[in-house]
Length: 160
Image (cartoon, rainbow, N blue to C red):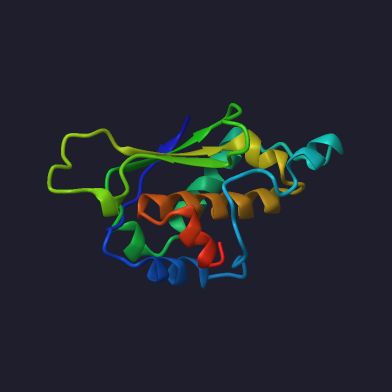
């Protein structure tokens, strides 16, 4: 398991996060942390790609490094990890922790929040390495949004 960390502040509105992260490329389409887009069909047809663990970890690092610097600096107490084994059914990524918007002055002495990106789940719905890299980026942004206190309903409203 590899680990890297970035930081962001809870006072940045969801619209600012969405605009700053998503205006940078043409990936502005709905993301979902669930593998139902092509999931079982890709597996049944043998059209999945296997990305080596080290290469996949590099994709996660590139996704984190691609965040606007000002947003990365505002994240607090979060670790991003890659899980190479299968994760929970239907998930591409998982945020576990206390969103920045829910933290109070009593928030101290706690373990870092954790964002886990599931390599096998992402590879299972992709056909090419570029699709894997794009999905990794979307999944990382999706889970980071949860760290900022943005729920799935709001992400859908924002077009993600």
